[in-house]
Length: 384
Image 1 (tube, rainbow, N blue to C red):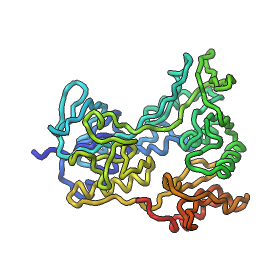
Image 2 (cartoon, rainbow, N blue to C red):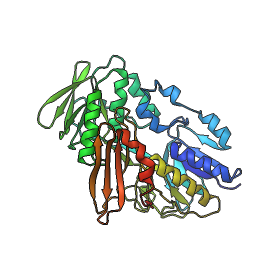
Image 3 (cartoon, rainbow, N blue to C red):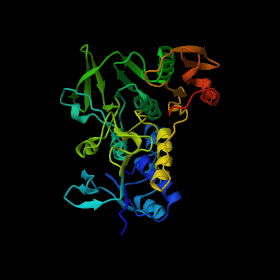
């Protein structure tokens, strides 16, 4: 019997790859392994589910059983992989059972970064990284009025905006001087902040949380300057760290993520990686559009047509209805400067990152300016 194509992970990366493979090959044995119940849902919807009136149950689009039927695949839910053996070409599960593979794909995703918080309430801090997390988070919201969010990045701001739909005005803390500090230049970040504040979000910037203390049924979040912020619930959204432990233990090359080339191959010729756990040709882009490009290219490679992944310009949509925002960040380390082209109530804010020769290398569009996404995207060079 032919050893299967084995995919570890049933998030958007794993299931998208499986679908792309099945478009090209209906017969190859296919096995997917999941840490959870393996439902198909859109992870990006977790941060705007409240406004959409979605629960953890209604976010599920298809069950694991339905996905197995559609894909002609075996899906193993609630299984944890203890180790990989590249030489023997098998994985070992907790409990000792092994499963052989012909090719292995790591679609492991990423884990929330946990701040080193002191205090007896530190272990109660929530994060939302998957459907199970969202179920726990949403179950805790009944009667809640005060939510503190640690982190004013993409996910923190999206959750802050979403909580407004529940009548909650969240407080957002970050050490950065403006929100979305890794994506937006100063003026754009402050424009973004002002619109969210007008909608009801409170920002406390330039401040790091030091501790979370229990205080009756709620909490007190202690800041670096000694101030205390009361909260009914504390949500951490300070970023994600690629899951690389399995790859490291197996002797694969690991950088920020699992190191792969443009064909998504690791340092072992029969092991591949994609999605949030992968660092592709030096780039780690934990967004949906890069994942889709990776899945299409890898599916072709796995079915007999070696294909390099390409990255066209891929602007990031920030899901904050209070201030619609689209960002195409410049490449890390790119030479150039941000320039504000327009900042008016009617036109919104447009910022361009221009190289020394005047060419466009990135942009940020806020409010009505988001209508110019296509025009500016067409002027950007490919990322890869």
